[in-house]
Amino acid sequence: MLKTTPKPARRISGNLLVVDDAPSILIILKSFLEDDRCRLFPAENGAKALEILEEQPIDLVLLDVMMPEMGGYEVCRKMRENPRFRDIPVIFLTGLGRKEEIVRGLDVGGSDYLIKPFDKEELILRVRQHLQAHANQKRLKRLAQEQKIFSQALNEELKRQVERWEPVQQKLAELSDSSAKYFGEEFAALQTFFHNVRQWGDLLAGNDTTMRSMLTLGQEIDWAQWDNLLAVKGTRLTLTADAGAEIFADVRMVNLMMGQILPWLVELTEPGAEITVGATKAEDAMQLEINWQAPADRLDAVPDLLDLSQKSTSGDAADMPLRLSTNIMKRHFGDVSLVREAPDKARLSFFFPNT
Image (cartoon, rainbow, N blue to C red; front, side, top):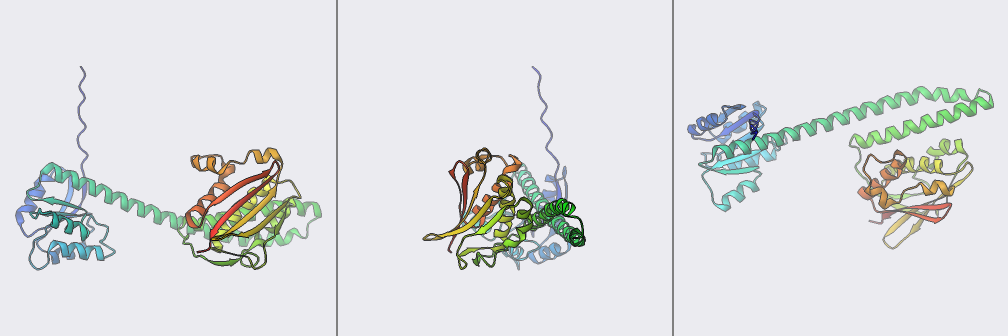
């Protein structure tokens, strides 16, 4: 029978701050971690520990509770109050094994609690787990920051490109009618691209804080920004809501969703078709309704919202505008419904709560 050889445990690395007034603890920990790539920084009291934290990039703290002048609980509390140190894992190493002491240690921000005398394998395992979790957390923060920087750079580049293309749009008026129509269509598509990427760039950059306020549909939402898109296909957009109709929402988020949904609807409709946007007031919500007419075979291809929510994120790209808008609504506002009223007619409704 062929025997398998167990894989050796992966070595760990990191800067460990050992806070204990007993020198023997440092010797024990050095012997426990001698096979790993850990650098140990000793501190005989709480004040010295906080000083080392200011000077060294510490990845984990092994902290005694009973020490003169400043105990371990107070050290941990000060760490959690400092934005620079609050995410560093803290493992209490102490002879205080009562339940009340363990609860107190976790309550002040401790990540783990080991009672002296501790087992070598258990200590190594917990140190490894917390070092890995801390490394993963730092990596996620770094990736988020890199994503934000990338998105900001992308938005700046798009702004420069928009400024570059504005003079081209002015020159189109000087061309013949046929050339102006062709280039006008291409330019409208390019404008839509710039608009959509800039909007989603803001969202990826983390600028998605929702600022809800009462928005007047006929005035505060920028319907005119889609005029070029609609004109290319001859589609008409009609706002049927009362001029004073209001929804409680974030105007940027509403514009963002409309910037996804309207191009999607224009593709579904026939040239010259009409898309109407209205509002219906319910008891505890305002319902923003979009009605449109399209060939039956095109509406057949529109997915049911329930089916759409069960799809993986790698589903049909044609469904993405509907998927994104549904996710935004459910994340920030309320529900969405999609109803087929006739073989060639459909209604998409967004429900915005009044509070």
